[in-house]
Image 1 (cartoon, one colour):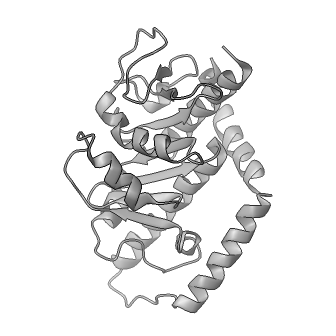
Image 2: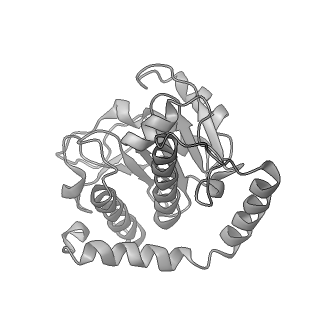
Image 3: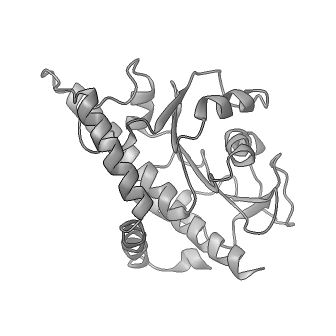
Amino acid sequence: MSPEEKKTREDLAACYRLAAKHRLTDHIYTHITARVPGEEGHFLINPYGWLWEEITASSLVKIDTEGNKVDGSPHRVNPAGFTIHSAVHMNRHDAAWIMHTHTRAGVAVSCMEEGLMPLNQISLQFHNRIAYHDFEGIALDLAERERIVQDFGTHPVLVLRNHGLIATGRSAAEMFSNMFYLERACEIQIAATSSGRPLRLIDDAMADRVYQQTVQMLEEDGDLPLEWDAHLRSIEGRGTDYRL
């Protein structure tokens, strides 16, 4: 195993543990995947049937673009669950890391006609950076992959309407940050819309300004390593067995 793959496995296992900690899981369903550095068409995915808090670096399974095992792992995988991930991985070189969730807040927002609303500073992080894909049933049809890619475009996050959320990234840190704050924005929206009080939406001019500020901060990328290191410390206090 190359040092690059070992590091990817450890970071991916950390993402699963972090997702479990922040209650972003759907029991044994949904996935976080990562492209294997230096191996065209190979990806890492969780063993099917494992809880996310159980995932370790060595338990991750290496698969191809169709979800077939390529590393002799004894663990099962869920090829159908890789349908969405494979579509994006194969067509987006920047999407080396992909996370898909079915959280209560995320699915609730995916059911709203308005989608993610410009309600606060957190939601504005995704102004002009979020895409939508209409519900087509359970994602088992490989033909849907082309439509997902078309709707996703070059955006970092996608709302699967009436289904859930997807976040991508060039690194584990970027992907997890995108999902962490997208989920937070959804939680705030559900809280605000459930209050029964009139909502104060942010106008387009201010949303565009925040978008430009967000793009500038992403280009500088100064805080992301600090954020990722803090995330890792939050789970290492519970043990480092995810690295095994």
